[in-house]
Image 1 (tube, each protein chain N blue to C red):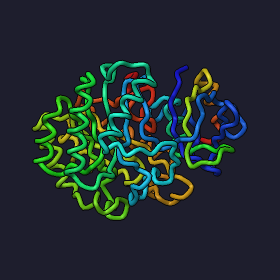
Image 2: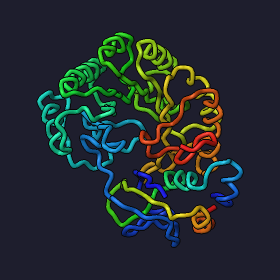
Image 3: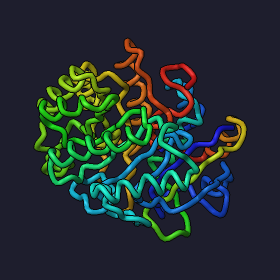
Image 4: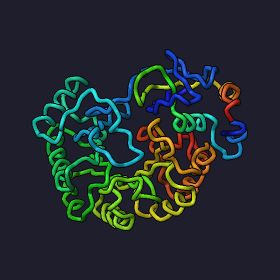
Length: 59
Length: 298
């Protein structure tokens, strides 16, 4: 789908956190719960570098 | 790090997974999850630290026809027809009891999000009755209607009785409207919508529109927004298209990658760069903006 989160963040001048949250909305989420939709509060791991490293394989 | 409110589609094929209180990307832990629950379609829900009350007066579970909408598939814990006056009275008294309030003075906005009224007159009557009722309960905020059932100048004029009224027209897309929207919505043409938005502003109502990012190609998005940006006095509500399992293939074929959404965000920022209007964070949970807008922190 994407090459690199940091690369895209730099190219579009959009923070990585915004890109991850947008991607989450596009992709949805999987869970064991039996429903079509879920809602929750999300606190992303502290630190953009850590997130970039974790998500890198997607992009 | 901030908490972000998420309301998402469940997709078995997603690389994101929730297990207990953790969000994973594949096998990597990337975030903490709390207040996890099924996204029910209930009679009401709160936003903006419990100062915005969203009501669903006519159950949206029976509202069908727009291809991108998911409410008719949602489960519900409470279905109350709030267009029945006694039900609406009881609803507000129950709400005040539940939230420990003596009146509605602490509410900033009451939002009516529904396209399920039998006709325009019944919607206008409901909004005016709602205003009468909540005024007596010390409500001084805005009554906000999101939908497309207000289609005449007569209605906009009648709604001027409401001290602070806002109309968000559910445009949703600029292309393939006859295929993507239910008939009653697509029959209200973009030219007619423009005229009504223009009148809405003239009658003093806060006016904008809703748009789903992912249904149009970028060029149609850009042309459509340029065409409509002069008919608003508050920033439009942009929602990312959330494609559910049963909606696979709904997205515009160019919108299947993240670059489309990044491009859309940049395009929208460019179109509105000359204006002071900005996205309202609490209003949209599937937005294109979370921490910054046009290079500025939100």
